[in-house]
Length: 380
Image 1 (cartoon, rainbow, N blue to C red):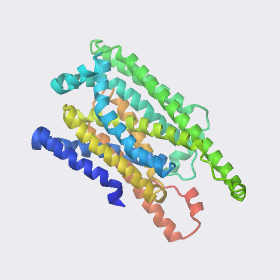
Image 2 (spheres, rainbow, N blue to C red):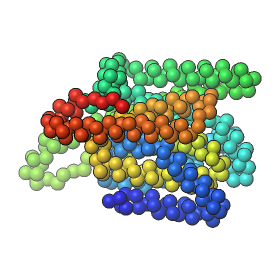
Image 3 (cartoon, rainbow, N blue to C red):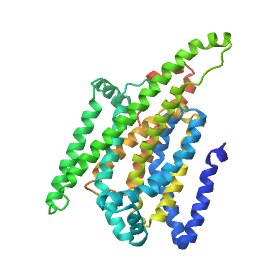
Image 4 (cartoon, rainbow, N blue to C red):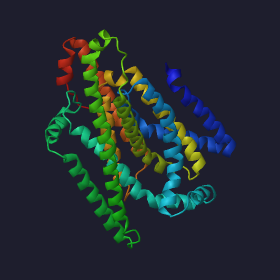
């Protein structure tokens, strides 16, 4: 099971490390290894959230996620995305941007750094909306009950998530604008850039998340109808027709996963520049890390880990909230990638430990599991 799920990741790791040695010797080998670990540590919460969505898909779409999805994740976000950032921000052609990335690495890094505010605003707003929609939803299972109960009540107010997100964006843009003016006004127009990029992130979340949610609801309705009509159809001897709606639902959920992965990868791509400005080594290291995140997602789904450790999803969403805040803060201040990674690991670790303690209590009580699920809430 382990080899089947992580086989491709092991193969890509071996190929990536060998390619690094041929490209730049043992120094390059070390850099790629460090980047791989960085990507995995920063993206563990990504895997947990992805698993929550992926478990609703069938085996076919899980394979699509691991094949086409990984191509988008590795080549799109870890290789093409940094080049596109430079091409757009510096108003260069794609070929010029690639040439710059390979021949003038310092200038390339400088251009990516200049584009960071818009990247952080877009990714920060997208992730913030995921976090807000999660904590404002009333759930049977609550991890931090003292916090989640009042938030669930507040969540009954329409469009509260969007309002809070827009206020956070406005504060970020104004703060950054003031900061830019204090430093000579050379980047004063970045406040507007932050605002526009943040709104773009919000709109992207609402479109992609809204469509995937709509088709998921439609799919559930269709499945209920099919279940009711199944016996009649079998008696009539009619073959069971494929539900086209399932394809649409899965497609939009897949699209949502890809946008989600893109938002998660922003911090990894930007953080990688603290280690190297060589785009080849960056693509190798982050690509290896992305493969493990993909495999880990599928492993969590197939093992039913999220069902066994019910607070894991909570911990991952709190980590998303923390990452969203960190991304928005990095518009103005630099934050060490080690801190970013540790925050996610600590929150997920705490939620896992709470899940283990809850499972022990259930085993010892031996009572009504469903009632326990509804009533038990644990502190960290």
